[in-house]
Length: 151
Image 1 (tube, one colour):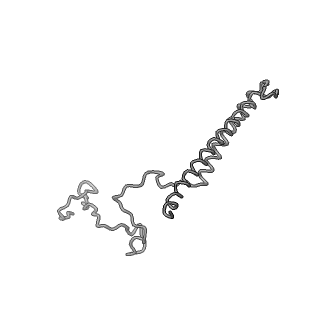
Image 2 (cartoon, rainbow, N blue to C red; image 1 turned 90 degrees about the vertical axis):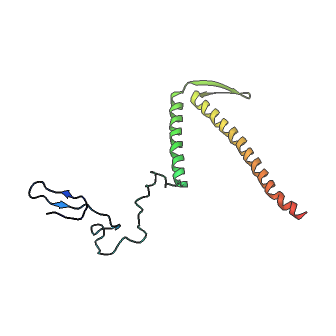
Image 3 (cartoon, rainbow, N blue to C red; image 1 turned 90 degrees about the horizontal axis):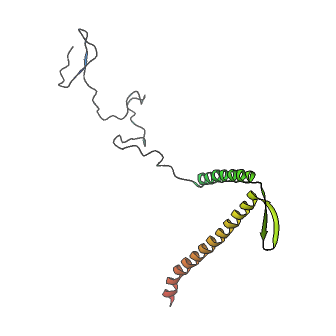
């Protein structure tokens, strides 16, 4: 059995029972009867796909949300707290501390924890003062043009 379409054919069997089949030709249909059981229905509206377009990189369409960032912060905070607890429990040696005339004894881990908290408070105070300074500078700079227009 021979097809004379002028296109190369593929033999399915060898020998006397060989059958030649022409290659599959893409006629531009996006859906076939196997994908779309309703004859002639075509693709669903809004479901067209561009085969030439490359798929987006993995994870590129993910937008961070506040809830996701909050869970990340909670996880990081929990890891830090566990690390601090381990540090405090391993450093239980009592040390003498003298501060502004006060003399007291604390475990080494607890004393270092108080020192870290004090450092955080100083940093937060200085950072807050700088933010306040920048906000006031921005507000006064944005209010200046309106003053110039009125004079």
